[in-house]
Amino acid sequence: MKIIVKILIVAAALWAATQLVDGITVSGDTTTKNVLTLLAAALIFGLVNAVLKPIIKTVGCAFYVLTLGLFALVVNAGLLLLTSWISAQLDLPFHVDGFWAAFWGAIIVGVVSWLLDLVLGD
Image (cartoon, rainbow, N blue to C red; front, side, top):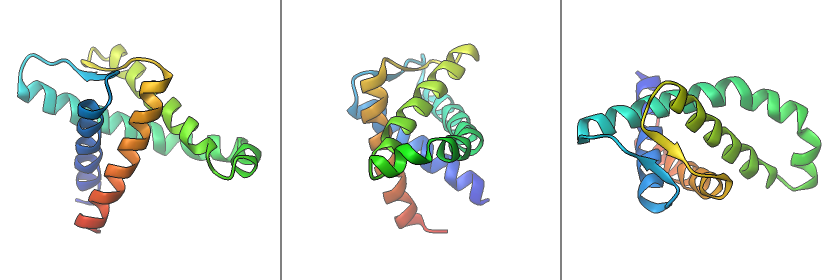
């Protein structure tokens, strides 16, 4: 049940990013297709974060220390770009157009996810 709530939170955060950032789009034909695309993208984003983020944190530990943690924003943007690429391979209409869209989108996804997690709790 906790996993389903997390996926719904990330899907809502991705929706917020599509509304606030020009370069992040979900281009489904219907509202239902857009919702299912956001849920699938949230699942992909969660899997990418679960698999790659610990590896990147371990390998790039020095960059995290040197930048006082700001390197995490670049890593999150890269993971969002990777999510967009995987979505394209799976023919999902979720697209992130470039690094800066991914950068601002990752900030929005992080903040909205954090706020929703505070509200909904465990």
